Structure formats: structure tokens, C-alpha cells
Length: 489
Image (cartoon, rainbow, N blue to C red; front, side):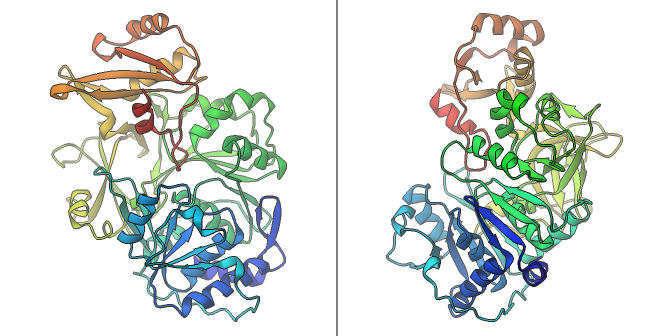
């Protein structure tokens, strides 16, 4: 992947590589910035380098420079609490951080860390020197939220990343150096990696989205203003744009990728009028499996789904999947179980955490090592994987097994899929569980919703508590932040 990017530096030197805050940067400007930074870090002994997430050319150049230099990068977010950034820096043993603005925004303890402002580097342009030779070395480490409250490190090796790149290329994208591609995700979220690295392998231009102001408005303005041809977005973002669908026109969009969370079949169907010439694709994958590992081209009609959640399709080349029951035994076609994935894209284990690794990586009946995703799925007669929700979204209440997504589906149908609805289990004394329904609306008639649910659901599935919320909070991955909503209610 990095070799291909370095080739585009030369081949498309005068082509636009990035448009950031309405400023266009060519491949020549990008490569010069990358080589300045890589010369600097080549001279350093640090193997793991922190990079402050900013919407700047130097930030993206820093990531490329670290990859070219054969080192590992970790993204630190300026909006994260000081404690979290400090903890990540400690866990990853970071002693060098690259940034472009006033360092005070980082909230990081400066005592044991060197900070280098990449905007202030000398203009001398060194010759490129690729040293990314260790295929088993880590390309990056992403820290996700751990169940204990401590960040959990997911190291992705160059071998993982290149296996992903090979498989992603085989999806048959019709894209080239003339395409204009969206990068809307936070750099702490792994979908951002393919959103900017892949376009650079083909000489296309990456359009980033400003974090200032209202993000979903910035996304649609970027799509329309620059007539983008490729966009990967989170369904939560499309849901926020739903009131504006009649005004949105994206005739030049060739591909719409939905990712990061379950995609709603009615929402995607409604969006087709906005992008009449686009192919819609649902891409699924846990961070531990390197960005994406399954793909489902979404048809105009007869879309496969479960409770309105669009199927995730077939595995990438090189990915093996199993659907396993609670006894680690494969289930039959059409039966629900936990999705396990295996292949060269799957991480070797969590960062310095053998216990967590042992919980999630296990040997399958075929002798291969599998990652247990925690996602409930089925495989149908065509070999397509049908997503049925999270393992932790299937609960037992009064002895009955309940899929929370089924309740959500019934409520969303009541509102003609014009708003989001989530059901949250809340555990009290003696681990007693109560269901809370939260609807993204300013006002609702609770009695009518209860009557609607009672007419379609058994009594034990009807939530006892109903809440309104004007806007659902999103996390840094642009997913609905269920944990935060539970805190708020």
C-alpha cells in the first residue's frame, strides 16, 4: 500500500491530493511535507510516535511519514480528556508527539514527551527513503474503549494492512486519479485510514470535513460543493440529514459506502433519490479485523435485512467466517450465532494484554485462529451474512430471550423511519432489568406509542419507560453513543 502511494507521488505530482478547509494541496506538496517529516523521524530512536488529530495537511503527512519510516503511529485527540491521552501515551510508550498547533490544546503531560511542530520544519526537501520493511511490525495502534474503563489497544501490523488493501482492491471499485473522495471520520477511528490512504494509492483527491460547526451539514456541503464521486458515511449521519433529503442532489456520486454501525433499509432506500447514479455498499468489520472484512452491495429492491438492519454480505478474499453457538459449535444455515472471523487481516492480539487477547482470539474447529466479534449473525442459503445485532443487545428478561433491535424496528416503523429509536436495558438492584425506549424527538405521545408496541410485541418486550431526546449524541466514530444516552436518561 505504501509503495503504491509513493508511486503516485511521482506519477501525479501536479494533481490535487487533498482539499482541506477549501485549500487544495498537490501530490508534490504532500510528498515534500511527508519527506521532510520522515527525514526528521528517521533520525529518532522512538518506534511508536503520537500524532495529534488535526484537520491539517501536516497531520496526514505525519501519518504517511511514520508508515514510510517503518514506525508505528498512535492518534491522540485534542478533545479527549487529559487523563485519557496521558493513559494512551503511557500504554503505548510514546515519547515523541507530532502536532501542528499550540500544544496546550492536547491536554497531555509534557514531562516525558518531546513535541515537534511539523508546521515549523525547514523547507529543505530530502530524497525519499522507504524503510517500511518489517511486514510484521505494527503500522498503527488504535485505542478503543475497554469494558474496564481503561483504553484497549488494537495493534494493526503492516501485514494486516496490506492483506486488507489486497482484499479491498478486489471489490472491483471503478475509481481512478480523477475521482473525488470523502474523508469525514475522526482519525482515532479506523475507517478514516482507508478513507484517505486508499484514494492516495490511485492518485485521487481526498476531501476532508471540517470539525468546526455542525458536522453533518459540513459533510453534505462538501459532497455537493465539490461534486464528490465516492463517500463512506455512518448511517447516523444520514439519519440527521433525513429532513434535507428532498434538497440534496448528488448526481456525480458513484459509490455510497455505509459503515460503522447497522444500516437501516428504509433510510438507505429514501436516500437513493439524492444519489440516483450511485452504487450503495454496506461494509462491515471490527477494528481487530483491519477496517472492513465483509461487503454487501445493496440492491434497489429485495434488500436482505433483519429487523430493518441491512445484511453485511460476503467475506473479503482471505477472510474465513464461522457462526458459532454459545458452546463454540457451528450453527446451521439460517440459525443465529456469534460471528467469528479469521485471516491475515486479523490482529495478533491486544496491546500488552494477554488476558483480553485470550478472551477474544480462539482456535476454531479447522485449527485456524479466529476473532470472536460479539456480533450476532446468520448465514443464508446464498452465503450472505445477515447481521442480527450485538451479542450484548440480546438479553433475557423474565426468562424470555429478547432482541432489542426488534423493539427498535417496531418503533421506527411507527414513525415511518423518520427518526431514530433505541432501547436500553438498565440494571438495578439484584440485577433486575428494565427496558428504556429513547426516541430522537422533541415531543411524542407516549400512550399512542405504547398502544402501537402492545399491538405488535409480546407484553414482556414493551419498554416500561419512554424518553424523548432532541438529538442523540454521537461518539468520535460518528456512531450513536448509547452509553452517553443511558447516562443522560
